Amino acid sequence: MVLAELGGSIARALRRMGDATVVDERVLADCLNEISRALLQADVRFATVRDLQAGVRSAANLGALAAGTNKRRVIQQAVVGELCRALHPGSSPPFAPAKGKPSVVMFVGLQGSGKTTTCTKYANHHRRKGFSPALVCADTFRAGAFDQLKQNATKAKIPFYGSYTESDPVKIAVDGVEKFRKEKYDLIIVDTSGRHKQEAALFEEMRQLSEATKPDLVIFVMDGSIGQAAFDQAQAFKQSAPVGAVIVTKMDGHAKGGGALSAVAATKSPVIFIGTGEHIDDFEVFDVKPFVNRLLGMGDLSGLMNKIKDVVTADHQQPDELLQKLTQGAFTLRVMYQMFESLLKMGPLGQVFSMLPGFSAELMPKGKEKEGQAKIKRYMTMMDSMTDEELDSTNTKLLNESRITRIARGSGRHLRDVRDMLEEHKRIAKVWSKIKPPKPFNNNRKPKPDTYIQQILQALPPNMVNQMGGMAGLQTVVKQLNSNKRA
Image (cartoon, rainbow, N blue to C red; front, side, top):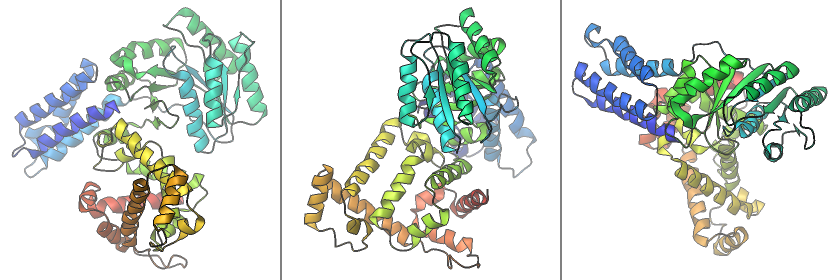
């Protein structure tokens, strides 16, 4: 993700400031100059960068700090605070759909911004949250629009409506919304026509569709690669249509993504999601504080716990069951398979990585991320060629040379690939064998969480423990898990 490069540049500037022997006005000026260069290269508006510099100087105010104050921490907090302010629209949150209550969401935007793909991503995101979404294609201007929506919706297993013969987009939209209302779908998404530029015909069609379908929310989809030009585009749409929220797409492939986000925020339009790739899971909720924390490698534990909760709930599996499987001393190949399945369902690995404190999406660039996912899928393909006995066995000697040869042939892989997978299983099993489950699991006595955390600390590599914040960091993870289970 190109935005990770921006985050990496800002994080490096803060680290260099932290490494200085004495933190004074000169060190602060050097740090701010480096951050400003990184922001301007990302096409952030000059006025925004100037305001950010002034805001950090005002918040840090080194001359007024008491003796013994940690100046490095004060400056870091000031930078994070000003970045959040630059990306926050300052307006109230937009309408949020509710389960079981029919809602109509209309997507608008220019042609080529990724509107049709984003409709499916939005529908898929809510489907995973327990909604019953449906798609309506009211784009009669672009040839192939209905075919594209149909293909995306079929792949995501989401119902859709459109017409090859009807040329009136208003009639298609009204018929589609009416059909899905009768069928009790609680989130009806209407995809509208785009144009090559902002023109009167586009805004007139939007107005007619809005009057006919009476949407609860109008979402403007905007191409993130246009950078600070997003300010004028978002402003024009906001003045001409009742836009309630913005989704910025193509944030993975262009250096101007940060500029687009800050430009949209300057128009006081709330960004609710960002598109980070072509695949259906390359879609992130945009929440300013966690986004900035992840960008700078500070992690987003609450976001990570929500992802884990969503995956576990989708699998109809209780967190305690999963924990028992991982810690009961029999880490079989089947348990590893289930672990890999859950990991893949959590979305792109780079996203998950950036949620761990001390890590950053920059540590797993797009190429490496795909490589990691491909490796996991290869391992799962090899395990698909195993028998139940081999998957559930705790006997490491069971998989002899003839069995390994059979697995390699059955999965179409080399013998060394199967051996690599078995070595990986041994390595992960060794880590989990050091973690003993809190006893007892089944009666009312509560296990001491600190004992369990100490076992995890001993099992993990020391450098990872330090990056996660040691004992305090892991206690935060456990608290998040407990609060998610009660929710």
